[in-house]
Length: 155
Image (cartoon, rainbow, N blue to C red; front, side):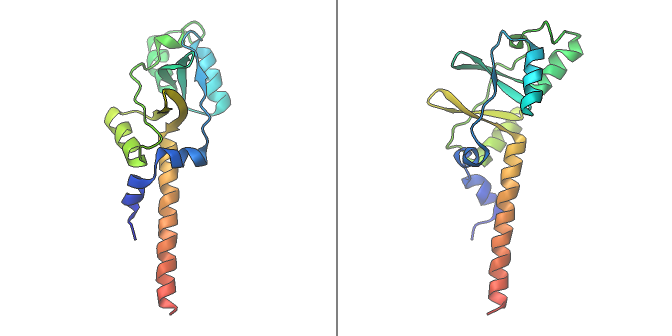
């Protein structure tokens, strides 16, 4: 029987997207930060993929807004997303493991990872998505272990 750490190493982004869904909320770089904030609130997400047509050009998050608009006294209504978006976007593919994702998030101190397949954005993972998946897998592992132990005792 594998341990809980092995689950993180074997569960892939593809598995997570199958259960979470592949909805990706996007915004164009020329749109205003205010519009981005409205979309973030309406969709109850913490980040948007910034797309120039079909090309991922950045990611914009609530953190970008707080650090690059509010703290600099800018106006969300007048500031375009391109001025505050993160352009060095770290991405993963469906075959990456959750362990790989956690490693990238920790290494780069980020909370969101776009998922790319064939040069197309097919998903967007948050640290919350990863934590939720890992907790569910560990609960399953513990349940299996408990069933195994109870089964042995009743024989």
